Image (cartoon, rainbow, N blue to C red; front, top):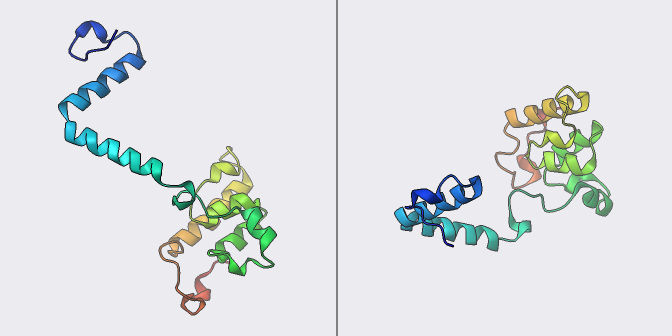
Length: 147
């Protein structure tokens, strides 16, 4: 039995069938936009995870295990601040790359470590730390780094 969005008897059976009917209706009424959505989905699925902006290229633990100092980290000032304030290396790495995932520290909004991490993150964000990565160490204004 196939569903037909034009058949009123097919609607209201379940949220799942209603969702399928809405998609069928959208596909029939907007073929160009449907094709664009499918193309975007295919493009997103064909992009390897390591090329995605959502994930740092390495974990904090991996970085610490393979480097003697944090100076080689692309966001070493933020990474060092988060580490120095007792935040787990992997979470510190995610925060240092500019992702505000404080829920990884604690679900409790009143957690003192989460609040500290939020204050550190906000200071870096206010000074535009993640806006653009400097080309060289000479471009870094060390007076703006919150310590």
